[in-house]
Image 1: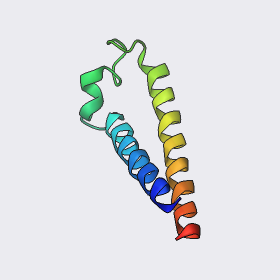
Image 2: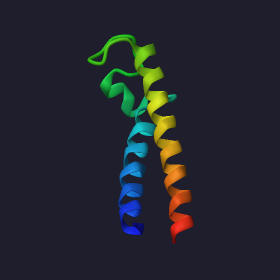
Image 3: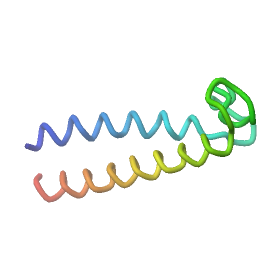
Image 4: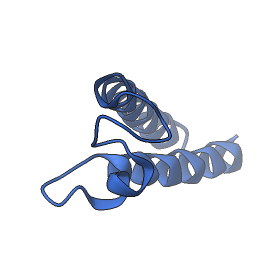
Length: 75
């Protein structure tokens, strides 16, 4: 069980890093390449995409936190 949760932890962490990099910052960062920060682009309207990106980031952060607690309880 510990090994399974460890693999899941790595998977969640990689996805979370990718999601954080997708957020637009001062210089629009990586999200500018996918049109997240602007109103137009391949992903459609910016505000809806940004809101969903925020939701996915929070979801994966909570999953990472919960999985970390589970790993601490098991190990």
